[in-house]
Image (cartoon, rainbow, N blue to C red):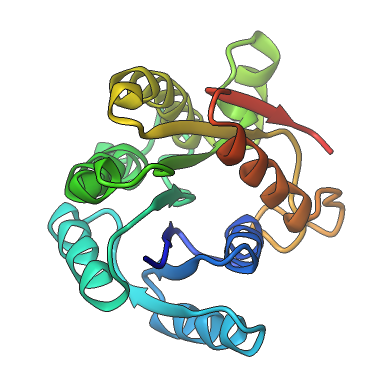
Length: 230
């Protein structure tokens, strides 16, 4: 049976690296983002590299759309083996002035959408011996005065809250789903990744190297959270 990885929050950085790594290991790849052109072009590029891939346009902040997405992927590519959540928003940057609706959107993308995707995929994941949920974490999730000051200085306060919540969600789901044979883990990326929105020309991390970290934790199936700084 073909294995399928669903990459939610597809773009030219980490998620493209993960798509190429897992695709090169024999996975079919479902690319998911709001931008229809982006996922279509990404799937075409993967196809030219010999990887079976298909793009799915979806607003990952819309939980009803996320549930439908899982159904659409299953209908098109078969059962889901790996769910990779790379989606994030970049609003609610200053908590003292932001519209609280922006913060709600951030959690819809980073937490609620992921939980809905997990629930909708659960039957598939339980039925396979190598199923996994993989999260892209960030250094803003970590608890320290320096990190908190950085979130304020960078105007990424909303993102810091969501990444901290994802970090906790990773651990909770890891223990909850372990008995079902489903591995849950995250790679906390400490630094800027080339090709991402945070790359201002000084990024040092290669997407392929980050993707290799995801492959290693997927194969090892024991680490709940690892930190990668290159």
